[in-house]
Structures are given as C-alpha cells and as structure tokens.
Length: 275
Image (cartoon, rainbow, N blue to C red; front, side):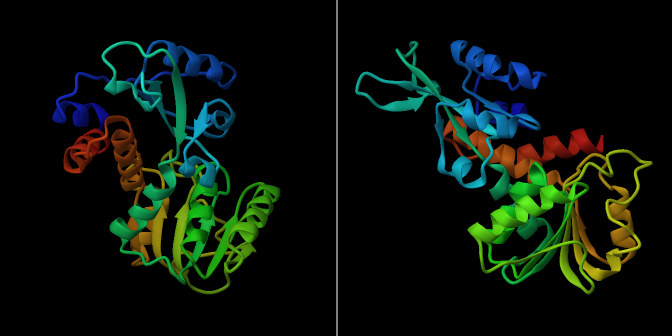
C-alpha cells in the first residue's frame, strides 16, 4: 500500500517492516532518528509505549492516548521545526513527533464502508484494549447514544468505561451485552484471524440478528466467521481493510505533505489481501 503510493508520488523512498521487541523500542526509535528516517508506523504493543518515548505529541496522540505514526523533524537555521524531507543537509537537531491516525480511520471506515451515522447510535464493542480502546473513545466523542463494552478481562472494560464517563458524560456505557437491538457491532478482538476461531461473543447472551450492521477490524481473512454469520443474518457488513487504508493514507500525508493516492493504495491492498 505505502510503496505503491510512494511510487505514484514519485518519491524515492521505501516503506519497510521491522520486528522490534518492546524492550528495544526506545533504542529502535533513537536509531531511526540517527539514520534520518522520514517516519515510522507502530503497531501493537508499541502504540502505548511510544507515548513516553517521542519528543512531542501531536493533539491526535494526546487526545486518543496512543501513537501509531511518528514523523521526524529537523530544526532549520530560522528556528523552525520542519519535516526531514525538507532538508538537503542534516539539520543540527532532530526530534520525533507522535501522531494517532487510527481514530479518524475507524470513524471514516464506519461512515464510508457501512454508511453509518454515529450520532445517537447504539454500539456493541467487542474488545476494550488497543484498537478497541481508541474506537470506543472516538465513538463516544461522536455522540453515540449508548456503548456496550465486552472484554475478556472485565476490569479493562470497567477502566475504559470510567475514562469514557470523564470524557463524554452524555454517553451511556454498559458493561455486558445488550438485551435488544443495536445499530452496530464492532469486533476489536483477534478472534477471526484463524478459520477455526469461534465467534467473538457469547452466543448464549447475544445474536448477530440483534445488529443492523457489523464491522470486523480483521481484514485477513477477508470474511471472518463473524462476517459470514452477519451476512447470513442480513446485516450490513465490512471488514477492517478500510480502517487499514485510511490510517495508512493519513500517515503518508503526515510524512509527505501531499494528498494520498487513495485509489492506488486501495488497489494495492486489495491485490495483496485478496490475492
């Protein structure tokens, strides 16, 4: 996705994947800074750890409490901090700035891929850690009516519920499953990555027939057991490909200062995921 976009923009850059142990994250970030990387994406479990490791937090990272995108910046001769791509020589000082592009991506994916209007909606969120936490906070900020939180570890759901109550006091938050209909179910768990995985909810307490739409953050496989079940129940469905696309597109714009070629990025993603 990113390399296809970089080629389309005419940039002689490369997007590469590195496996970094959490204990080595700080050293990896300092190494990237020393080697003049333009920027970095971070995934689980680094998004929370990086909050205390970057030099500056953008408002998006402060608001959502996680960093998934880093841009390296240099100090020019006029005392201005600029993206490293704007320098022909090595600047005298380099800093890292952390951003979060996940929250806007989930919001955009729900609106564009499912046609969801979030205001006053009722939502069941499965999974309260990592991406689930960011999704919950973003949904609450969009003035949904009620959020039902289900997590394997109940205390994590309760902690998230308290955070939502402080940030968005007008949103009702319930720990557990809804008794009636909901507008949307979101799967933010890892259940569905494997073909043999069970559904990510307790079938004795909830049925997809109670949902009007179902969004699974998993994008590979294209159709998880949850989405198959939801389609059979005539729910509107979408997988996590859109969320992946939109968070990546925004990251590219942060690094390059140019509009992301969305069609090219989507096509590269679909070719890779769909084979």
